[in-house]
Length: 203
Image (cartoon, rainbow, N blue to C red; front, side, top):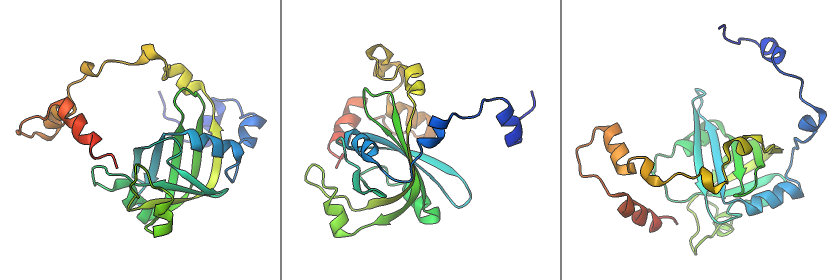
């Protein structure tokens, strides 16, 4: 089957987007976007480096951990991770960013695209204190596009349904999978030990 190589070919397979789908895109955060962000404990952070290599990284915290500074500015605190700094390196390289916000139990999502910079200002970090701890870095996002994403993907996935959840035991432990992928020969950390260690390092 031939590959699609032009916008014309692609458009020939789909209807034109409706007026509502086009008009819902805003250049700022309105009250509905603000409300969604205030309820969201989870966001996927998307970035790209100068060569176009892409990265998507999950970020989480208490609902509203990302702060709306004004209609055009979002503040996302950094929290302890694996120290690879892939997303932050990409932000330094290109300054481009995409965010996908989720609210548990709500099928619609919020998409935000724009530019970003890494800040260490004491005042900005103080706005993002959680569990009594300020982040060492805040991602300051300048919003260029914001729009609510329709519910179809999450409805298809049944993501919030209890029956969609699978027991953790259907997969090997994280330690076992990383050992197999990296070829390591060290002892595998039990899953419950890893989870306990992570809980002590969340903030």
